[in-house]
Image: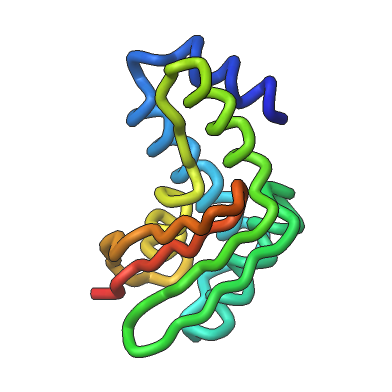
Length: 135
């Protein structure tokens, strides 16, 4: 996966934002296909975490919760992060399609508009917390 992701980024360096958005939309469609529309915030959060971890197999562990209008997605062991570290070493831009996947999934699966609140990285490669504000 690391080599695949690096090759994808390097071969599309001029279109990364479009590709990232398209991947997010495609993966959100996959979540909707497998789980349908989900109105309950807690059920949506569980489905999104399961999808990232089990269906896409992007990470070793994903947890998501909705509290006070904020969706918090915590990821550990992200395989894409390791590829992005390699890209940084090569002086190439990283690309994280997980962030737009959350935004697109909130819209398409949960029926809510949202905005990215922020991304918190730890010192461990592959760990982050992504926060979205639900509108």
